[in-house]
Length: 421
Image 1 (cartoon, rainbow, N blue to C red):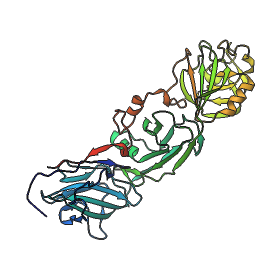
Image 2 (cartoon, rainbow, N blue to C red):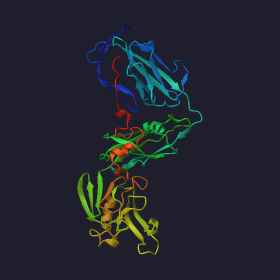
Image 3 (cartoon, rainbow, N blue to C red):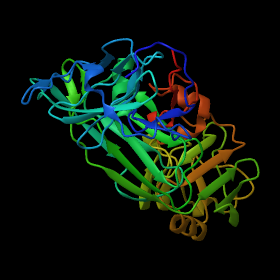
Image 4 (tube, rainbow, N blue to C red):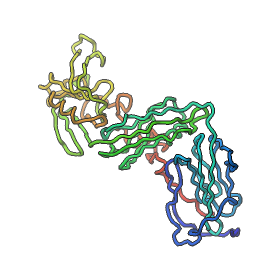
């Protein structure tokens, strides 16, 4: 190894951070013969905070650190992952003298750390280190439940997470969020949104592509979230997306236009909410379908016996809010459908049209109302109003990207290879 300090040219490339932050090289050695040689053993060039003795275990609550033993050469990359394939995020100093982990390790896990270096002549070195972490002691585990249930859904279906413990601290939320993985084929840009201390929603920037496959996985098992809480095991989720179905109701023209994969396939005369009971404006998502529902005015705050009181058998009811807004058969108002708004907030149509609609939608399909005098659909808590938030506001609900609108997935972020000293 040449210990003479001198200026040298560095091959330009970037390191792309893989899932949970692993670095993988983004370029080759080019024409540099030194970089094409077999790596030397870098054991004498670096020091590592973890134990190297057999049987010794690492405290998962403590960060990893790899440093140069002298000012000769530098570290070029460090990749750390456990036996399940989970990567550990880390930061490499600009001068290549130190790398340290920035995400917690899992308890009771086996890790492999690959350290790449180069000497002052640019020759590559490598050292592979392995270690095990200790088991957790006395910590609660965080329960994570994915939703919806496995099945086929419309393009507007958000992914949901219910936690069994409150997570309020932003740094702890970031740990949780990094451990929740959503992948789709075809791939799309998406982000998590913290609806509350125990609930997250995930949606793409735009609606899911038709016929996509979406898989959700948690990497939180054994990961420290705080001093008293670590991640637990979670059942994976897989859903498929059907055709792109959008039902758009214009409350001013009293028409519902039904789109399938961008094509108009039906137009249905409807009635929506009358003054004082106007239908909510905005995007909603089909929650469930019920062949028969008994609808009572008392359930939405209408006094029994008043002029607006009702108690009706309703068929082909497609629910879009938990507070009681449906698209349904309303044979009693056929004379007003297409001409006037006379309902108590639901979208009513003839029985034959309601049956057709019922047969052509599924949970997750998009139902949008425009030109109503009603208030806007609630973003959360009354169904899925998630799509009424623009992407900038949605991104701001993530604990990872700080509201920048940047991708929340660590594999989408990029760090530069440190320049030569």
